[in-house]
Image 1 (cartoon, helix red, strand yellow):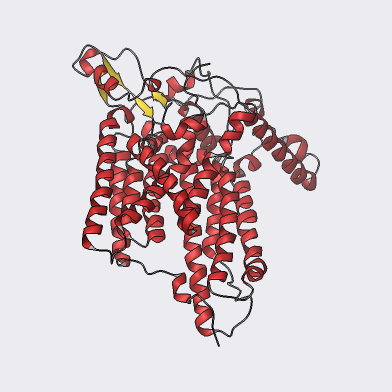
Image 2 (cartoon, one colour):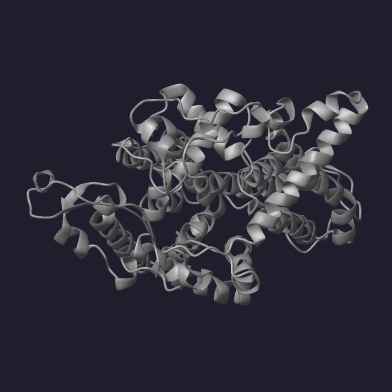
Length: 528
């Protein structure tokens, strides 16, 4: 006889609204965000900020399979100038191709994604920014769907997608060929897959509860496709930037904690032993072996080419197949060690560098593009400006900061899993940078925050759900909550609209540009 304390039905709260609306409404929000990201995507017609590294590395991957050295440097950007002129003769000429191998600081997946856009649409600004715009647009859809699943509300899911679409930093990185938008995309997808796995596992437990004989440990759940997908996505995040490892570790812990909680909520006599015996082995494989395979596979071009940095192809092939495999692995591990050493020793001054504790306050954004010498005729005034400023929407970020504090109080008082998961994800993407700032004095920038922006949005949406109240709350309570949430969303929309010209390189008068510089630190150089 089952006499467990918690009804199994509570493991899976009902979803509000139909499945069709649950897809159509988030898709509509994603299309809106996609329009913002794709319209005038080729503007500015220039190689902006760190595009100078990734655009050429991506093209080299498409042409050569590995990153090769290009003409010029940051102070003498010959290759950049040729690209804008339509000349693809940008690679250095060497006696041996391996002599032109380029040492790169990041894994290749993000550059492969940029290169896919270049291959499809050509080596021009639209082509090299296409993949970033697509990833940014898809992330809005994923945001809406995961928020809907967590809140069981299509309305709140769409609010989450809309707020992400209206974030200035997300917009800028979705319109720029940098790696960070891809890191954010894969981290968000990994989190979404884990949330789906949480529901999937609980449905399996409920099915067992209703039909199978009682056991102390509970059932084996078998293969868990959503958790395997989560591992693949988080491996992809690491294959874009090494900092994806912070999320991988945090989410692996989160997944097993959810398994422990599910078996305990079902009332099993040995919930922890059941989770450790039945769930942990599969979770270990999904969150270690699968990410490792994805990360290694992203280097396929390096393994298959003789021209990559540190490849030692000739020496390896002349010594037999076994030595070839072993030496390839040794060379690859040595390369990863060099990359990690590069990142830990990165201390060069940059005028737009900032410290991680200042990021939530948007004290020091990054100027991606600000050309000088624009003709007065371009804006109808004496002085004109055309800017791409990498900054979040202040109304959204400040509201999210308050919401995160609210989540701390909510989690302490109720242990709500949604609050805990959101806080953990935010901490995993933000707090590790404190170590690098203090211990290594590393050069860092505001846009390193982009992987946690979805979780800032999620914090705001979760608090919006509390403000709105339950569906069966009194009408006055619901109306007041809706007014408050609607007002916040409207303020974010107006703030985003006001900043939009300096996020997308619209040509405006210099006085209009100054009016949008909300702090003096947005235009002055960082102290040395």
